[in-house]
View (tube, chains in turn green, blue):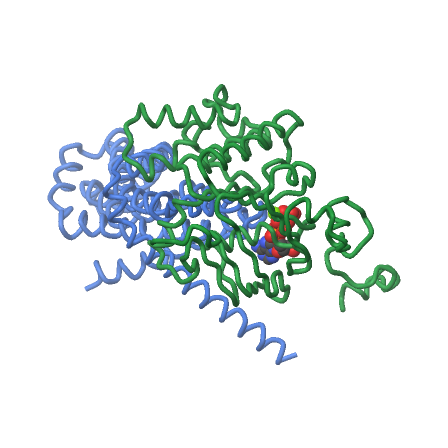
Length: 275
Length: 260
Ligand SMILES: Nc1ncnc2c1ncn2[C@@H]1O[C@H](COP(=O)(O)OP(=O)(O)OP(=O)(O)O)[C@@H](O)[C@H]1O
Ligand SMILES: [Mg+2]
């Protein structure tokens, strides 16, 4: 596949996705540039995780298309989709480590499944990845013996084990202390630049994300409400951007899950729930 | 009223057929993944071992007690007709044809089947299965099919162990306690238990039960609502459905195999 180097790696057009009645995306257009770090931000529950799963081909949109490296993810055969996934890493919000394998084997898992490398090479690769996330010493621990933040770092090491062309990080900073947060921020930047990866970072940490992202998309209410480089968004007079970048409680970005009017709801008593 | 009732009936029927359909899709994926399991015998052996370890002890103990009870009851009945020499035959036939395949399958459902459902349900709830998919590893091939095949292989082995221990139990009680002639016990058994008609059919039964038991266990695990409550309900369903399916199928198989 001779792909135009300047074409975006991920191209999303007219994406529409609903879970039952609830529409999560309604006409989203989004481009992820090659070689850059693109941040996707938005209030909790807007569908950031859902978006990553759509890109990874785990969920199917009702309308619209998602192309990764020129391939329409949802038109690929299962085998082709799996080939594509070998070139994408996804760091799950929950970590999703395999609980019957220890830390070392978890990171080695994709290598063992997809390569025929000799044991000594696998060992070196795994230790390198673990060293990068600061957990080389924890290689013998089982996932149940890790803290949430540690589990996420192991999952990160696993996501980059196969040196993919693109890594999607779902909330990599959650549960990290300031030191490991700083290390992770630098790690994501360094991986991106040294291996010429493309990175998608989903995060709520505005400062950290703005510091490493080349481009930011703000999602809310099923739409892209603002996008641009961190500087552009910081300067933008869009109320959406201002509110989110500065973390203000009042503004157009909703804090609440869609609901009936508060006062009506309280006054309705039990009747409200039956309706 | 009647409309409501009809509607709920229709809904139940619909969800029943939906589950049946999904169950068959699960089975289809399990079956087409079997070749790739055979390419990785280590994964398979691990699973056979872990299923075996889970169930072996309980099979040994139950087999012994069931055999002992068969020895007692068989002796009481046969002695009335002066036919206590036939005790060996009676115990062995009951075990090989019915008790070993059925009781093994029921114990398997309670021990290994429920564990399998809980394991898979939790793997789903903690996103381990979708994590694998995102790493381009097919959970059907890596996780589910090895467990499926292991159960299908383990079941006849466990049933054979059950039968062997049961015969020993019947021997202790009949020959050891009640004074049946030892030579008659064994020689009658040898003369009257047919390899093809009895042993072979018993093995086929337990292979069928093996397929059904692991299929249900895996399906329920995969279909579980990914919460602790959902997993616990799925576990219960595995045991209930497997037991009913095994008992029902056993009647059909017995009628086909041993009915004239
Ligand atoms: N399995 C599911 N079934 C039904 N609805 C779901 C499911 N998973 C998520 N949702 C709904 O989809 C919406 C988007 O969820 P998603 O997990 O993508 O949010 P998010 O933006 O990642 O939030 P957060 O920042 O809290 O992780 C939520 O409103 C949620 O209620
Ligand atoms: Mg999320």
